[in-house]
Image (cartoon, rainbow, N blue to C red):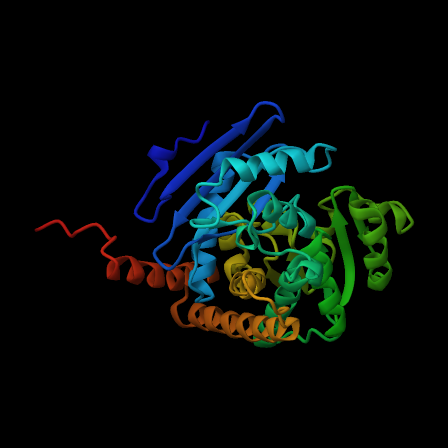
Length: 385
């Protein structure tokens, strides 16, 4: 069923949906600005062959809650380009997309990084629109904060995992961990969890899953990722299992860091992990969350666990016009503090009220957005009795 923006609007948004195209390059894209009550629209831009308006709108709404949950003053937005990021024409398509949104960028939306885009792509957007204000996540050589390259989001996921584990009576030191997806987030989470003493017993990419009950060599995996990308699972040696097999590997901690909708009710009923920390956006279904809660599995929601990227983006937003380099150490300290504090806050609220962690996180975020909307006169007036 096709997505109908007018029928899908609710009290929160979206405020603006802009679809653009460019026939010479074959570019098709969309920008969704969901809610700007707490600040201008800010969110990542993804490029993939199957991008849809519905997908981008869903992710934009998630950004509304993520900014509010971490209590930073930007609004939810997301952009997507329907194109293969492996194509030789990627740069031409990206430039066409940026040009098509020159009315919205950077006054209403600032490009960030998501699936399919890199730090260099952010630099291309800045060049195409002629301003450093157009994108964040650019290379350090251009005065940017390359938070994907630094692994800020994955670092924050691991910090959230450590805080949640301590609260659940699990010691990360010596705990077995599974990482689904070994992109920027998954790789950085694996690196930080290893530093905290965890043993990575399984990782996966779109090419398959690697498992070893005695622990994989994370340093080697990281080197192979640099050389081979997702094909690292083939280069590691042995015969990778089918993607998804990693979810059923016995472990205390699972980090789904691939894509959305990977853990449904059937998978949730079989997961051996005691703690699920959502590195990807929207990896679990509502039914899966209820099943996991019933089995005593703690879930740290994506709007809490992977919000390290938005903390870094907030720093980068402030630095767009600065002549000075961002302080990466300050960013990591802030990410650690916020991820740990917010994880404890949401899990404490879950214990106090009996609601699911996602519901506790959304209630926190919605309360902050609702207050901002009311203060600006954006809420619908009450209907007299």
